Amino acid sequence: MPFPMKTVYSVKEAQKSMAQLVRTAESGRMATITRHDKTVAYVLGAEQLSGLLETMEILADPKAMQAIRDARDGKGTYYDLDEIPD
Image 1 (cartoon, one colour):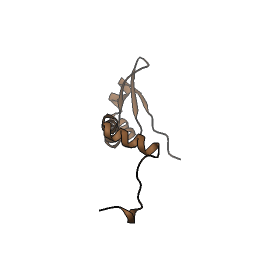
Image 2 (cartoon, helix red, strand yellow):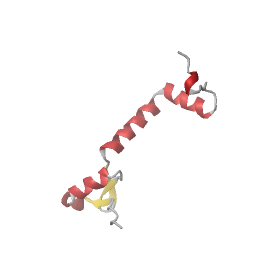
Image 3 (tube, rainbow, N blue to C red):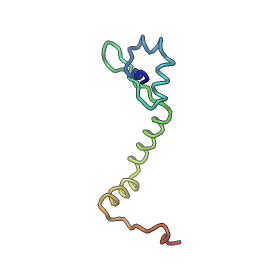
Image 4 (cartoon, helix red, strand yellow):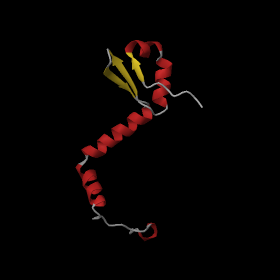
């Protein structure tokens, strides 16, 4: 069984272990950087950050949020794939 990747680094550890920090972020896990046991930064992989930004865009779009609320409440119009109107 492989060793679990470290996810919390002090600033000094992060400076010394940049390659390991990047591997942690690339694996989809967020790395936390601390100074004096207080969180000062997070390192995310590009895919994770992209997903987060996309989610924020959807949450900021009133029409998208209304569509989500309508779907959740069963108010939408649904079609079978072979019945989609032109």
